[in-house]
Image 1 (tube, rainbow, N blue to C red):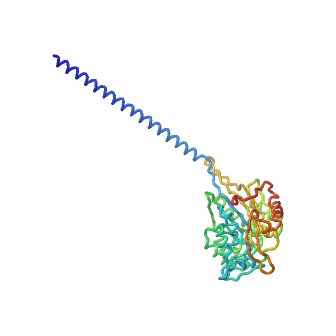
Image 2 (cartoon, one colour):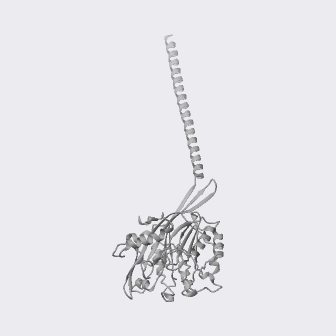
Length: 405
């Protein structure tokens, strides 16, 4: 009887233990299930937040930009190329750009105007009034970081068709450089060229209004891109819906004039009406003003002056280095694209040389920021003079380039 009671008691205790274990197990499973449900909910909430964030990001305006530096004429007189001549008969212009190279290399796009034809030594080198320059000039500019060049000038036809053919052939060997203004066929001239930098698509055109009386044959007008309103309108219309920004190099103005002539104003306003964002002027061989026109839709640099030359006088040996930032903002909500040319900055550049009678030597380019009275006596007076000319139509122009900081 006693044993039976003990057995019954043991069974009850065992049953209680089993019940407790089952209860604990159920509780554990329930807690785990609840935690799992919470984790799922947290993950869902997180996913939803991430989805909303991505959607919001998609609807946020997208911003793109590139920085650009522009310098003036590579006007290669015999003094310049004779100074570049090496003992082995080759030409080295790189040493002349050594002080500006660190500045130029910091920019996304670096522009210059190749004033004289790069026909090369095979056609015979020559100086004023009908120039032909070594192709090593181009090598030096590319080495210094320049990747955009304007080729339509009043000296394009100095060596005739052969000169243009040699120049075009040279630049074709450097597809990394954007060039415009000279071609060897009508098909080449009319080809639509679209470039891209940092998410901004752009087109580049180069025109000249001067030819020094050396006209292209009537059936070969593609050799030198002479400006007309009709031609510019046709060119720009061919790219306007395909690009974000349009850049035009203009060989215009009055030689050695620090002022702007009426033709420059007329052409600038017409190009602006076509949708051109940036106009880069050369030809006067001295600096001229810069300004925004047409409600800030277009930025105009009327003349960058000489970059390197062997012309006499501080004014002809002082050029302009201009910096701008091209910005693009795309609004996904409205599908609108807004492109602006912002933050223009300026600095002067000086061509230093030992200009003794007959032979001129040691050509070297210096930012005015790096000048001293040994290189150019009384340089600060000149600095203020040319700064005043450049900024006369834009009083808030910032002096000092980002690349010099």
